[in-house]
Length: 140
Image 1: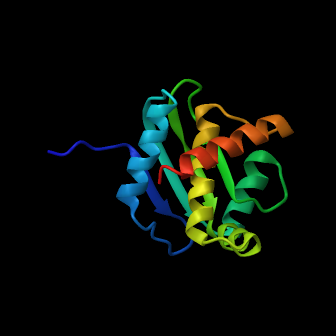
Image 2 (image 1 turned 90 degrees about the vertical axis):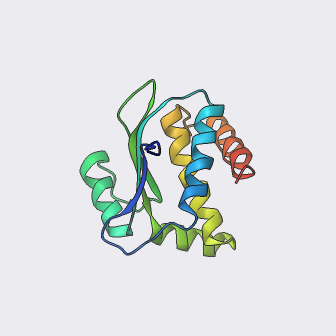
């Protein structure tokens, strides 16, 4: 019986299917391994702007659209949910003139880096996080 890896992808309120999900899963597991983090369970939830706005308002008291919200359930291991707005991914990709898939992967690893313990609240931390994102995007 094959090993069940507790890394899941699903959508909420939109029709979205992650392309190459096995490859993406392997990539994310390699990132966790490189960062010396143990996976307990991780779920990526792909949704609309409106769905993520409601989460942002309800749980973070922020009244604006965002591309990703990460909910950690452990301080030491990878256990959490990462919500990603596909609407924001499409808009960001268009404004940055990059493929949607590239922007999606960047946001996916960004959310994972938050679970690993990286932050982007200051310019210095944001720079480090972007360097990590770029480093890991090159692995895909």
